[in-house]
Image 1 (cartoon, rainbow, N blue to C red):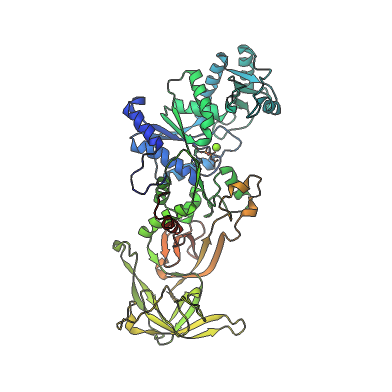
Image 2: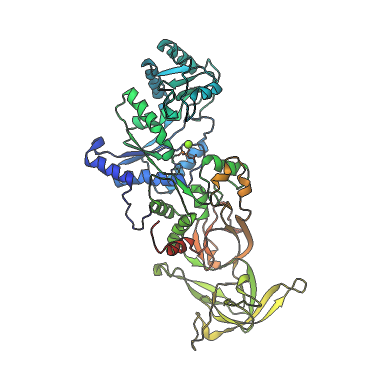
Length: 569
Ligand code: ATP
Ligand code: MG
């Protein structure tokens, strides 16, 4: 489902909510939540969930809670909590005072577990983890009852209390819901609800050595917070009966409605914190915020704007069936945003020296350049022109093939905002034969880029003045993976064979026009004819400007759309 207008389309979730509001369900309240586990950095898939949950709350004058689902002390870290908060804020959403931690509910969750035991709906099981697996059965065969299933309430209460007191080793006992070992839904075959983990928690310290499982924690946290619509991804569909079972047994006041939607999958991208962590740990990338990563912090460092990501999330819409979105659409969204807002400047990525023989040695002219033709309000600036310039190596060919209209011996081209120049000679390296300098003449009558005699040139090149330009490092990025569906290859941990060896190319002798001298980290530009770039927030300094290429100018998405004759997705 794609949408092109600017209104949030009424997807099936928004329809359910509108329907609920029309019958005054939940007294007209809409309370959603975004519940990340703090075990990694957020990625573009989470952005979809954030935009959906916070978006729905905003549209309905409701609230959206940010809740850290921090029930697994072994994988979680305070570093992730801070980064998640920063990323949600950066995307432009505000949880106000509604910041919660599942770990804040540990006392209440423990009490709920005791209640289940008292009702005969939970028991302490002392099978080994291997035995539990064996007893669970398979999709085609029912499971077997645990021999501990018939323990008395008293015995269960005593054992659970002693689990909590730290008397037992990890894995020696677990608390299980007593549901149905023959259920066709494996999640209902007496799932674990509490396990022993003799481990410190980043928020509760050593207070607990039993920790509640996700399925038990999640529904009760939703209920405690008065969530009305608990929106999650499709893989939780089979957990919904358990979600409802727990809340029904405990007779809670608030029983939220769980609604599942299809998670975002993107071509050329892996989207699992676990796998992304592997990329970081194995050194395949330089960190969670490597600009090639699909993390929010990676995209931010790459030059993506909050607007472009929100626009993307709106365009992909919300559906009930899994699909893979073309990463070209994400690139299209940032291109659209930057086209309107990023000032255009000139940067030569691979410089070739040009000497204008008939231009005076000591003359420097300040030529007017427009900052963004899409937005006259962005004004103009001056760029210095002088006798020695740099142009792009690829803008000159000694033997131009057909349809190559740029500079060649004897040929005339326009320099953007400057003059027509004509190539009259070239200088080659005596040993390698490589062209190291062009000798040109300019036509003083063409100042500003037009010729009084309406003489046509077929190319307009970008350039910088050699003496005035600044050296810069530019990092060009490509897909991290070679295959469009890298997920298929990553489970056995051998995703390295699918890594694109050219996903990062570093150019160290680029030259940018002097107006960028004080460019701030994070600022965004269009380098004319080269793409959109941003000043790197980590490595750029007073000594050396470092740029990341966000995207090229070539819009493959627009081409795909055209090929589909503007049919919607
Ligand atoms: P991962 O598999 O990357 O670790 P997760 O689902 O385990 O993701 P959580 O921290 O539990 O990560 O996710 C927080 C919320 O974000 C959940 O509601 C989850 O459904 C949602 N979410 C995670 N990945 C995606 C995705 N690719 N598309 C949409 N929503 C997602
Ligand atoms: Mg998870």
